[in-house]
Image (cartoon, rainbow, N blue to C red; front, top):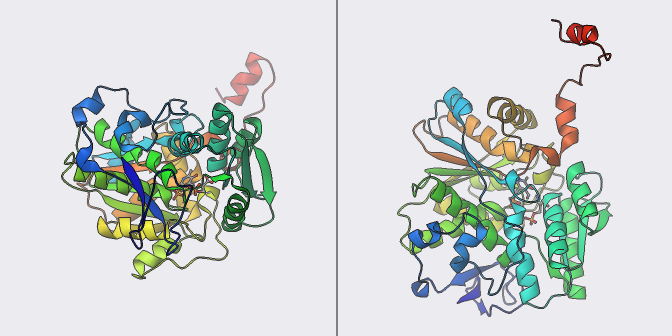
Length: 402
Ligand SMILES: Cc1ncc(COP(=O)(O)O)c(C=O)c1O
Ligand SMILES: N[C@@H](CCOP(=O)(O)O)C(=O)O
C-alpha cells in the first residue's frame, strides 16, 4: 500500500494518478508506503537474488515487472586508490554494469512497469544520454513507443547509438538539457505521454535500491558516507529516501552522510549547500566534459538539499581535469571503466580527503554511475593512439622496442 505525497504541502494522491508534481502547490511528489504493514525482514530479502526486485515490498509495481535483470551490480574495494588516499574502506558501486550501462536501468524497470500498469501508451524523456538509452531499452522490452529529446551535439556517442538502435524516436534539440526537459514536460502534458525523467516519483523508487544493495554487500554495515555525482539530482535523493525507509523499518541504525559531487562548470547544488541557500539557483550555461551532469537547473533541487542537509553530508565540485584524471586512475589502477561523470564521485572523495573534510577512517561508498564505453570519444582523446606496425615479427619487436 502506498500513496503519492507532496513533499511541500503533504497533499496526497492515489497511486493510480498520472501526476508528477503537486496540483495544489507545484512541489515534487514522493511515494510513501504504509511501512507499519510491510511484513518483510532483511533475512527474507537476502534469500533472493541480488537485484532491484529483491526489494519489491518497497517498490510500487503490482504485477510482473518489465525487467532485464537490472541491479546486482558489483561493489568493488578500491584498494590502490584507497591506499593512496589513506582510506582503508573505499568502495565503488559500479552501476555501469547494468543492462544499458548505467544506473538509470534501476529507475526504468520500475518506471516503464508503472507506465504499463497505468495504461499509458507511449513514454518520453529529455536526456543528456543515459536516461534516453535506458528508456529506449526498456521501451523495447515492454513494446511501447519511446520519444527522447537530446541536447544537440552534447550527448556522448555510445548513448546516442543505444537510443537509436533500440528504436526510440530521437529528437535533437537546439538547446541544452534543461530546455529539452521543459519541452518534454510540455509535450507529455499536452499529448498524454508518460514522462520518465526523474521528476517521475516512481522511477526514483527503482534507483533507491543502490543503497539497499550496497548495505547488503557490506554484510549489513552502513557506510559512513555515500558519494554520488549530481546532475538532475534524482539519484542521490532516491538513495537517501530508500535509506530513510530502511531506518524506519528498523533495518539500519544510522544514515550515511550523503555527499554530492558536481563539475566545476555546472555546480548549482554545490553553491546552494556552500552558501546555505534556501533553494538551488539555476545556472544558465552549464559546461563540463562530463556531459551526463551538464545540468544547470536540477529538477530534484528540493529533494537533494533535504537529503544532504538532513544526513549531515556535503557537496563539492571537481574540475574537468580532476574528473578525467580519476577516470584514468579507476581504469588503470583498479580495472574499473567508467564514464567521466561517474569518476566525479571518486575525484570528489580525493578532494575532500585532501581538504580534511573526509576522515581517513570513514567507510565510503562511491556510486560510479555509467560505463566507460558510453563516451568513447572522451576516452580516445586522453590516450595515445595504437602503435602502427607491419605484419612481421621484426616490425613487432621494433614497435615494442624489444
Ligand atoms: C553517468 C551519470 N552520472 C550521474 C548522473 C547524475 O545523476 P542525477 O541526475 O540523478 O543527479 C547522470 C545523469 O543524470 C548520469 O548519466
Ligand atoms: N544524466 C541524465 C539527465 C536526466 O536526468 P533524469 O534522471 O531526470 O532522467 C541523463 O542520462 O539523461
